[in-house]
Image (cartoon, rainbow, N blue to C red; front, side):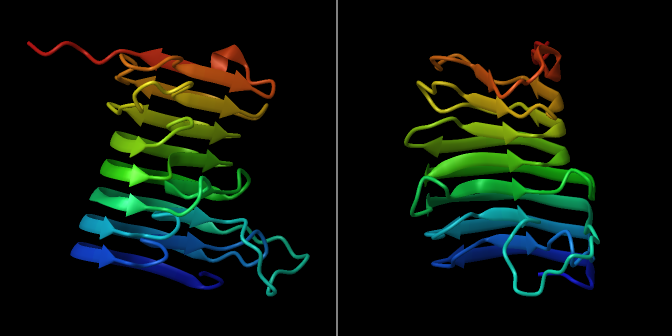
Length: 212
């Protein structure tokens, strides 16, 4: 929880069990602060009761004010994180970003994330400059990926829930520059649903290159 700053923080080779969250970074548009050069890798998480990997710039706090001071978030890497038994409600996600499009968000990466028995997979709201690669999450129902007012989002070499309808739910007029690369749509009912005046050009789909 930031009103000052945190920089050069690393966590690796750990096991989290029976906690509320895995990693949670939070601030508001009036508290500011900076979060830079954060790395978490090689971590098992089991029986997490809420969101697992969370960036929250819109949480309610008694310390907010009318003065706007957007937080700075850059160089975040979360890699090789896996587990099972996640979430108590349909709102709980493995990766949940509730950001601010007017704040500085740069180089946010999630790689090699694998979970089973989770309530939801990926929720990205007002997020920008985010890369997700090798995301494999098993959920009971609903879209695997929800993107609302996202900008410059790249999701690569990842899978959808079997029979997903849709796999991707993309909404918001301000959404743009969404790249879906190498996504396995083989077992879905619908690949993508776009709502809320999303421009057709906002989403680009590319295939993975064949291996020689």
